[in-house]
Image (cartoon, rainbow, N blue to C red; front, side, top):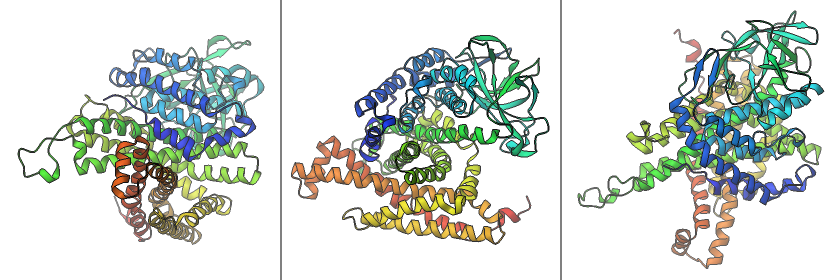
Length: 613
């Protein structure tokens, strides 16, 4: 199967649904227009199709080399990485003052989806470098900014985030890495594990952002500081000086993303390892969350990317694979054999993948747009509203998209049947590559705790009420819609379930029963995610329905059969009709899970807490 990008749906989401051209009316983005954005998207699609996607299988089969502390990347990786750098696509949304392109974050999200669809493993190093540079841009001192940011944003150097230790995974506050003051720098000693892109041969230098505890610092996360630790120390002019005693002790042999080096990094074991504190002492967790929140959106994009890639190839395969006869001809041994896309179960799986792909795209793109608007909108109240939405939706972007993205790649394998389980086709790799997304950058259980314990209650519930107001406005505007009204009504009922559960969780917490909300945090995130998806799919369906009705009118299609003929003959009508089917299918098939989750959460069952394992 040939790698394909769903360019038409990307364009719909950006230009017809989110209307991102409105951003270009604001001063920060006034130099851009639709033509410029389409050109950048086309550049990424071409690179993804011609170079990155063919590399994806090579990286998976060949894997990484590791010898004497050095990591060698698979054949063609370096050339592909250099091509990305030459196009200026390492940090597309970051400042042009430091080598970025200054694009809106929503466009960077689109570009990251395309790159991730062609290879999740390849997309990781550029994403980390961009995020590391952004932390330095926000919190670093003038010398750090001068020395490091441009090299990170252009890809000349790479970046990492170093949090996890063998005894301090999700419990970051338990870390043991130490920092001791020496003159204008600090001496770093410790070991970090599971460090993506910790060592490789793509760049001549790697800049590690390392969490460590200074001497006498408080226990827990309140005593953690953030340090910039280069693999090779730069000289006064920003050139390479001498090695900094940063060593790679090992690389992991993983289920998926095998082209991405996941390293054990050792700091200061063979001599002094110099680090420079970023920002203020004991504020490291705050600074690192800047990078982690970007990474969490990035992980959500990975869920979308693997879903989209899996769907596009499953759709091609289903149209070409001949097997069996149509259901109506089951008793006719001489009936013609048909493509498997004729079989109802295959069509159900395909439509699930289509609906989730489109819904997740809308969720991630809209959250990215809110991130842009919270910075550049002219009205302060609106900026605050958008910030509230970003805060609330970030754990849903990460957890919901990664969980359901993995499940959609399972369906991709199912459509391919036995071939999907074999390496002859890429479906099994999509599934393996997708699984990690629910684990790193804070497991999805932690995302659920963040949603229920922080985001739902922050500022007296402001984030949640901001979203609920937005949802209610939509319901009130469209519940009488001539064609979509019944589906809006189902969303309204699901909204009521969301409010009921949220109130129940709040009451349990206020009564001192903290275990019950924590026990049901993950089901609650899933419930909330279904509602967010349904809302977005219906909202997009409103736009698609209007466009479709205009096409019918222009064609003079006055009855059902005439409309069906328009859909058959007109690709744009077929596309908009497909959007409506995605919405209807999701609302009728997946949104009802909200009621089941409501019953589960409110059942009062405490068995997981009471059982003696």
